[in-house]
Image 1 (cartoon, helix red, strand yellow):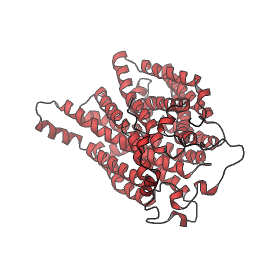
Image 2 (cartoon, one colour):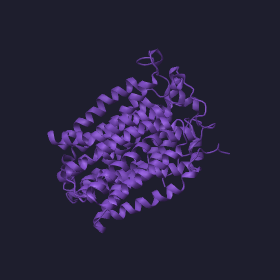
Image 3 (cartoon, rainbow, N blue to C red):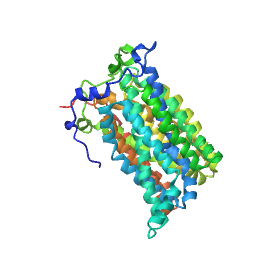
Image 4 (cartoon, one colour):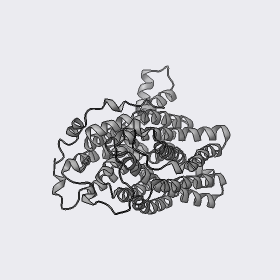
Length: 456
């Protein structure tokens, strides 16, 4: 369990506000826009999550096979390096959330995009760097040097991409909407789902046209230069600092469930509640399974009878289900209890895992598409809506950051866990069964996943 930072040592709220809102009207004032600027924030935050794709497992997965070929490392070594780097990055995410609470969206997102871009460029030179290090330390094998290089590289990539850039971009949007938060999150999920579903194909095409090294360099420059400039111009932390109101002043409909708690929870108060851990474990189990599935997609689907091209085709129909259901679920989440959506998410995971255990090509493909589509749709909604609705926005960065610490730790375990299952059991089935068991336990705990009472 990662060390929990002491929330009581934070600087006063006034100090944080001064840091975050010093330049909200530079280079332009959002209050002067002819429409509610939150809708553009929705677009900007969505783009921020999509730009993080090279730091997400679905983006790294496209580079796994060429990286293995280029470096000579086997699947287990690359999986372990990726897992160790991801686990180490997870330990920093609570502090990343605290930094976001302190300095706001523009500074933290631009820093994350810069680090991700520079890391991608560094990864593109892995062979050159390893050769130089081998000459400097001839007593070490190149395999050891490559592993030692990949661990911190993956740490930076996962921390900046899957971690900080995603946390900041999602939370920024959630602060601009309250009564339409679910709708905004559903719209966000449509384009994130489509972007992520196409990213492996785009990255694969880039690798085919150029090379995996040049592909990483192009993506690095796009992040470190162009997206950093975009963030500095268009990101804003919250509507209040810009003289605006959340939702553009919309106050919701009678009969809707409460969209924010009567008390802003601190991180320590949030983790003492059942809902925090039920939602965290459900989302984290999906991160573990989804990361492992995406990371080993070619190998997993090959064992069911699909070639490399067919393996990647599973993403698009899943994304169609995800974005369609996700938009509806986002709107519905503004009007129903969130544990109902959690039921759908866990059911989707169980369907996908059952499909892989059946191991019948066409039926397996269909169950994976359906299960992944449903679970991904709910994952996106719950990841964005749960924390501000149940625990408030004052400490949203830290609360969501600590969740992401657990989430990323689980995602780090996934690829190595599945690789070890294949290596020692000759099959992915033991690992899949081990994932299905906690999903079943979480289904039994759904009645406890309701809005927590104010802390005593």
